[in-house]
Length: 138
Image (cartoon, rainbow, N blue to C red):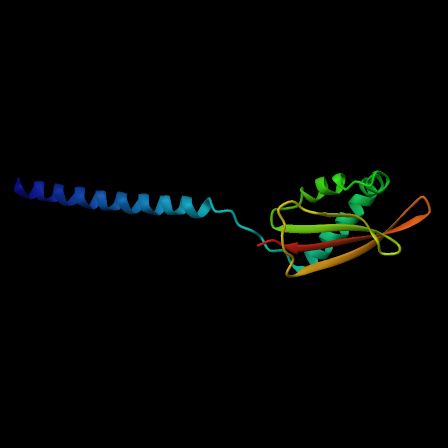
């Protein structure tokens, strides 16, 4: 009878030890799984992002409305839909290089390494230059 109590006590200590280890593993895995991860795009992806943004803003009329209204509100809305880690600045210039519209995605500060893409846009006989500059926000 004494041996059964000893085995019972050892089994209980082992079970508690196993439960503590399992809980530690589960809690630490929740911590790591809940971390948000920023994906870093390649240079090719930044070029594609720039090209796509210029094309979309041109085709949906956002650039045309912005030029006519002299307001970059529509551009700002489009830029704020980009993924968290991607930052972009859109600049619309007259053909003489003077800036008409200049907008940057909200929350983006620096651009240590960036990719630049240029496009042209014609409206009412005037030619406008469009630049999209994108980078990764750390």
